[in-house]
Amino acid sequence: MKVLVATEKPFASTAVNGIRKEIEGAGHELVLLEKYTDVQQLLDAVKDADAMIVRSDKVTPAVLDAAKQLKIVVRAGAGYDSIDTAYAKTKGVVVENTPGQNSNAVAELVFGLLVYAVRNFFNGKSGTELMGKKLGILAFGNVGRNVARVAKGFGMDVYAYDAFCPANVIEEAGVHSIADQVELFKTCDVISLHIPATPETKGSINYALVNQMKKGGILINTARKEVINEPELLKLLSDRDDLKFVTDIKPDADAEFCKFEGRYFSTPKKMGAQTAEANNNAGIAAAKQINAFFKDGCTKFQVNK
Ligand code: NAD
Image 1 (tube, rainbow, N blue to C red):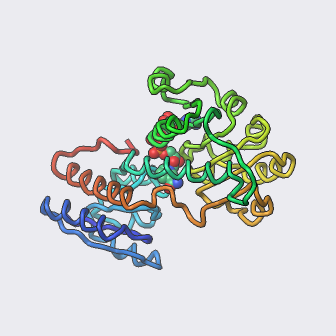
Image 2 (tube, rainbow, N blue to C red; image 1 turned 135 degrees about the vertical axis):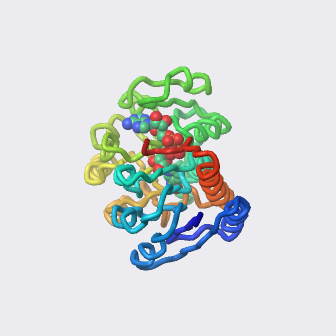
Image 3 (cartoon, protein in one colour; image 1 turned 45 degrees about the vertical axis):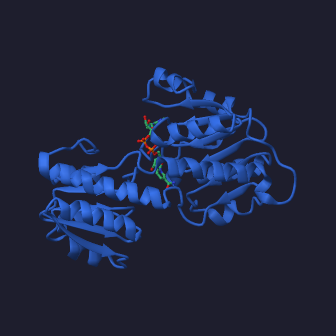
């Protein structure tokens, strides 16, 4: 089988070596399309691919139509909103992600951002500590659980709300389960977002919700920019000068947010999963999933069932 690794933003070379070892070790052929600058290059490369590994690359209907032999696409990472999963389903193409492989990397970044925020972005003025503060985790998935684990090391009091994860699973992790989202925002000093971008969550982090936060609240987004209602959050930051917003996903209105100097920070580009370990883990997991799919028909991580 021909396995295409199509990455506009390539994997680290150690990850590529690991992927190659897995794919070729299983008797398949590996083809690399890295740093492509034109979608036509991708359309040409997918023509005879049986499987594809992507990162944040867009897998559109045009790509799926061009990929006549494609049977499986694996997104090396957690979020798969860059892939038209419904269209893939109509074409009989299995779409998978590699959940959990970069969760620790994202969780560690949350605390990098958080320490930066509570120490006033290192402006030389006295800040606050995290110990004893209430952290609210919005969505207790792979990243949320890792954030909870690290938060305990800081001595934080940890709360979580998840629309689908049962309360007992949250409680068993030593985290207070909160039954609704608004209550989480009301209760906590810091809210860390870990929801996927879905029709329900897009734009859901809005004025009314964030305004529930206590004085001095900090909102951290390492999930997806689409979940933020940017015009409403800008208005809220303007109405309340006690709130801070730190993010790993630069908002479309970054220039507007930058006006809130000392209360806003964005990483220059999404860095949550940018560690050697996460890169390696996700790439190799993707290769293993493709091998399992061709060997046994395994679709354990399929997201478009
Ligand atoms: P996950 O699938 O493991 O967990 C998502 C959780 O969200 C699940 O527990 C699910 O029950 C919950 N959920 C879904 N809809 C919800 C809703 N409407 N309200 C409340 N909870 C809801 O995903 P993950 O690996 O933890 O990733 C979480 C987010 O982080 C995703 O948006 C992902 O794209 C993003 N992410 C960002 C980076 C980065 O580089 N910054 C890296 C990895 C993941």
